[in-house]
Image (cartoon, rainbow, N blue to C red):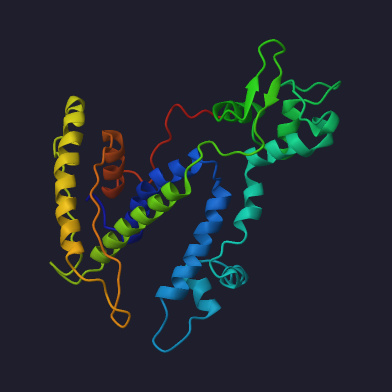
Length: 300
């Protein structure tokens, strides 16, 4: 490394890359930063209260506030909600796209007879309500063009070819609907793997943590080999999982008075592009604290 090793900086760099695919899932499904931030605050308080208590002492609100960086008032609110995330439904209204759609369906200036949403002209027009005015009223500083692009992308609106007007199609902003079981699988699988990594970060010595190994192509792999590699992993990985399942099935289930834990393994194939690897290496080598924004990002 070119400079002194900083644990906090290294952890934040690692978390930035950890969060990248997680945030991609959130954005794909219409979750805003404000909704995520509320969840993050709640988790910080939950973990501090549960995992960082002192022997024979209950953790105080002041200590939770010090550990998490939240105010004592905010920590008290989150403790009172007890992990139920009760504000999430209310905070969903903070999603700007959702507010625009709600206004389009409920504001009398943008609805016609029987409350049917009007087709809107994009530009401001003193004679009739416009899409630009709708966005300005319900989305604050978000450019109307960016809002329209997003609504078109998720099929919540469309441009009428004959009139050139914008028609709303959906009152709810959910770009990609996921089955409840898929979401549960996603959350549990990610948590199980990261729990193992956390244990191994804290292990006292070799052989004291949990089994976690990787096999990687050090010099990279040809794109043309990926399909064959996928088939190979599916075949051999499935054979291994069958052996593990047979081993587990041969053991009797724990009795009511016995200690019980949930344990298992996961096998997965990952694919990552070189630009992400280089960006991570630059952060750890001290060459860059923040990745440059892609040139394709524009300022509206």
